[in-house]
Image (cartoon, rainbow, N blue to C red; front, side, top):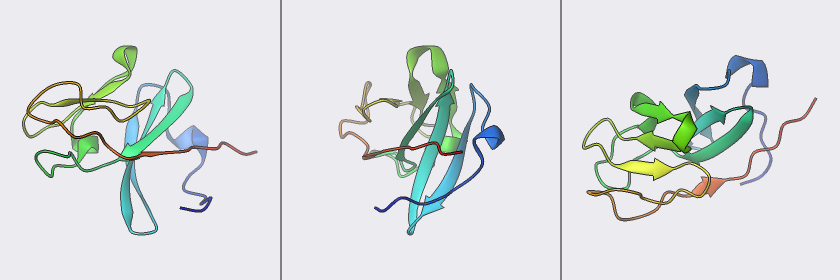
Length: 96
């Protein structure tokens, strides 16, 4: 993917996440203590939107709302069953 302007950084305060679409791909964009993370928004196990789930900023992870699988936002790793496949991770760049 090329660099795409998706939203003002002020629109995603620390401890929150939102779904954006970039070039047809659903992306879960999360603000972890001022650091933005971006992973594919669809759970690799249950085909659910991760932004409909729960963000745990202290542990850098998101929980799928469908079956409770956790994914680490920094690298997309599947942390708990039933998910076993990692999420694609996308680079984030904040510009003035």
